[in-house]
Length: 343
Ligand code: HEM
Image (cartoon, rainbow, N blue to C red; front, top):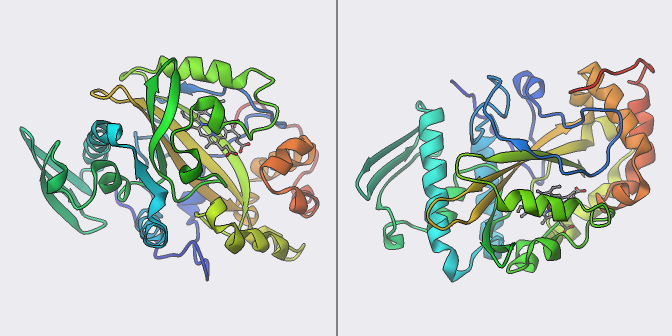
């Protein structure tokens, strides 16, 4: 598998772009013409080939630039990565899961040699070679969770499981859809989900938690979530709202196709072996409306979903202010044809 890595930015001049290959493999999240929250969980089985579901941790053309963007965010705000003291073992679990997966799934990019607890890791795209002792944090430049998540696309929450609940006790969060690890650290499943409209009354979170408590090592699961973002910005955090919030006001009928992005999160759930913690990677994919509508059935369907979305969801997802312009733009791609079920 050969990947041509883009040299691009997710801030300031926003040079991010999707190649035709990235557009074709974009994880379009809607399987019908309308949308409401649900417990949309399924087994994280790998395949079909070439899709973001093909391997355990997808690496794509944005990898190197995303990791550079993460490093910038962490330099400015180290609290984007936090791990409470009892979570160190879960950090080693996560490091093992990611290294083993990446080395097996991308042998031309990553190598892992293990001799007992003496490990040798090579990450060719980022130019990293590291010998270390598994379980001994003094042999790595960062703690184990920070070390490996500086080399893995997407955000990561690592949840401790106790008292019939999940607790956000560790994480690496630099590409989030407007929530804060520093605010949520130490909260449980219902507490950190408190701001979400409608889903609590629908019983979504009770059922979702029950499902997650029973995820086993051999049954990883996944779901897709989505929102809308102006400009291809990864760090849409509350901490930096003053930087990206005003950009919402720059959308016009002329630029909406280029500046308005659909932001899709591929969320996966992994039981970790030693700590019994749950790892929750949140992988973000961005596509602007111009590229999205190059696939006619996506343009048609997104128009209908956004046009009919309940106001509470558009408000919560933060794009109510631009919804009329977006829907008007997309209406040009909706010829009224029926869409078939499925993506
Ligand atoms: C939103 C974390 C699992 C459904 C959120 C938010 C966070 C979060 C931090 C943002 C809340 C805010 O506004 O501050 C997590 C973590 C999970 C998890 C760490 C893993 C343990 C799930 C599951 C579901 C779910 C299994 C299944 C239905 C939702 C929904 C939203 C949400 C519907 C609103 C998203 C939107 O409208 O864009 N989650 N979540 N979450 N979560 Fe979860």
